[in-house]
Amino acid sequence: MKINFIIFIFALVAMTSLVTKKVSSTVPAGGMMMYEVSTRPWMYNLSITYNTPINTLSDIPFEEFEKIKSMGFDMIWMMGVWELGEYGLNYDQTNGPLLQHYEQVLPGYTQADIIGSPYAVTNYSVNPQIGLEQDLIELRKKLNAIGLLLMLDFVPNHTAVDAEWTTTEMDYYIRAPQGTPTPYDNNTYLPNGIAYGSAGWGGSWYDTAQLNYWNSNCVKARIQQLLTVASFADAIRCDMAYLLLNSLFGSNWENQLQSWGFQQPTEEFWTVAIDMVKQEYPDIIFLAEVYHPYEENLQQVGFDYTYDKMLHDIINGGDMNAVRAWISGHSKQFTTHSAHFISNHDEPRGANFFGSWWRSDAAALITYTLPGLRFFWWGDFQGYSNQLDVHLRREQSEPAIDDAMAFYQTLTSIVSDPVFKNGEFTYLNCTNDQESWNLVAYKWTYQNERRLCVLNFSDQQGTGNIILDDAEPMNGNETIPVTDLLSNTTYYRSSEQMRTTGLYVIINSWYGQIFKY
Ligand SMILES: *[C@@H]1O[C@H](CO)[C@@H](O)[C@H](O)[C@H]1NC(C)=O
Ligand SMILES: *[C@@H]1O[C@H](CO)[C@@H](O)[C@H](O)[C@H]1NC(C)=O
Ligand SMILES: *[C@@H]1O[C@H](CO)[C@@H](O)[C@H](O)[C@H]1NC(C)=O
Ligand SMILES: *[C@@H]1O[C@H](CO)[C@@H](O)[C@H](O)[C@H]1NC(C)=O
Ligand SMILES: *[C@@H]1O[C@H](CO)[C@@H](O)[C@H](O)[C@H]1NC(C)=O
Ligand SMILES: *[C@@H]1O[C@H](CO)[C@@H](O)[C@H](O)[C@H]1NC(C)=O
Ligand SMILES: CC(=O)N[C@H]1CO[C@H](CO)[C@@H](O)[C@@H]1O
Ligand SMILES: CC(=O)N[C@H]1CO[C@H](CO)[C@@H](O)[C@@H]1O
Image 1 (cartoon, rainbow, N blue to C red):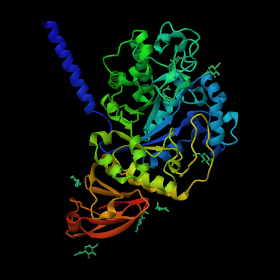
Image 2 (image 1 turned 45 degrees about the vertical axis):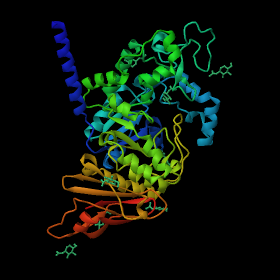
Image 3 (image 1 turned 90 degrees about the vertical axis):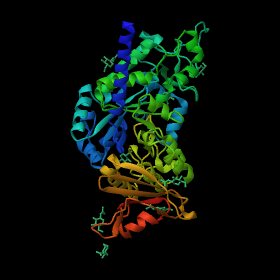
């Protein structure tokens, strides 16, 4: 009886602390801006730009970070700072299909351009090619001092083949079912029977070894590593995070897990791991790389932000009904915790994916005015179309597009206003006639600031009426200025009409208007 009572109190305390933690999430009510750079290629690029060797994180001219901050960014993701091994590098330098791919994306590449995938991590210690632990600690201090948060990687589903554990802790890995005759099938297993990393589709990743998340000792060790990453970072981006969900993990590795007698854990890895990390680092932000339909699952296990790849695909599909449905059909909670991007290191460049830089910019108008994490990628501002391959230190160079750079300068200045970060988002109907089929509209409000976004992702002009019930007379005058911040044009309109029949808008193809009123 007494014991039961104690357990009851204990459970109550545990539940209360869980609830408190969810509420105290540091994610802003509106949105947040994050800029991703691929660290080693960026440092290589800067050495050329500055014509001076940039060998460590401390050598990066600090004005580069100040520029990013001045565009309104809240966070920088320094992708790929952790230690890598010889095995992965050798693989990336010798694998036939990879070499063919390099020749396509970077004709005339040299051996020195192949720097190896940053996702075959051997240990969560700073890659000696970019400095020492102290360089990373100092960098974070300096970033925080100018108001930039630092995001770093955690690669959950595998380690490098030459990580220490593959020899010392073989049971941390998925292994061939007991009794499997040797030699093992080399498409699935290393010579010692440890499985290569795999998502369960698309074949194995031959530079990685697959961890076993149904082994509680492995889970404990991984949480320790996650705590190590947390000690260096304000935010953690978790690679392919959804593959660890018990249901997916169990079906991908069913035979192996059964053969070695592993049972499905009672809790999800992420619930336990994120909870433990947040106890020690309450303000840390977790971002999950995840694909449909697992976004909501990962928000439920504690991720602050989840990739919104669906928005990316739906916009590109060009069906504005689908775009409106995706934006208006989700809870505010879901959208506010989604990470919206035009491109990133895994994706083709925006100009390539969307077909042209202006289509990409029209997509950016929708993508980056929604609530949640506004996730930008190095090189997109320039309107580039050549992708930076994740194994290489440079991409094929091409001229920057001035109009694209001016566009991003304007867009980032618009969405870095507090109204887009702390404000309230409201989806709006755009009505009228057949010609508003191509428009999507919503507004942001914060204190006395209001913004109306009306965006057109199509090759035809769109017109429509949008009712704005909060349009007010200014100094007793019913006629008020309505300024489109994208074109910096001011119109004078009747606030009464805006409240009743609506504001009439004409939006050019592949463009939009963001009104301050
Ligand atoms: C790297 O620098 C060169 C010029 O120094 C530039 O042309 C190139 O586009 C840069 N790459 C990126 C991704 O910014
Ligand atoms: C791995 O990283 C940890 C923490 O950074 C460090 O203490 C440890 O020595 C490293 N282990 C190896 C094998 O390099
Ligand atoms: C597996 O073995 C075959 C035959 O020896 C070889 O051709 C192939 O490259 C090996 N595959 C891997 C992934 O090592
Ligand atoms: C928008 O229109 C739909 C369908 O006509 C309606 O159900 C919905 O309530 C409207 N939403 C707003 C915000 O007016
Ligand atoms: C109201 O504002 C408009 C636009 O600024 C101006 O043209 C008009 O004269 C004003 N009306 C009065 C009564 O002040
Ligand atoms: C917008 O236009 C006004 C004058 O019409 C000008 O004073 C202001 O500097 C312009 N702002 C920008 C960002 O171009
Ligand atoms: C193959 C594998 O290891 N599964 C995933 C783990 O992470 C990589 C990227 O680092 C994903 O691309 C894989 O699909
Ligand atoms: C300002 C802007 O991006 N305008 C674009 C609108 O769409 C046309 C194509 O229909 C582009 O040529 C413009 O650059």
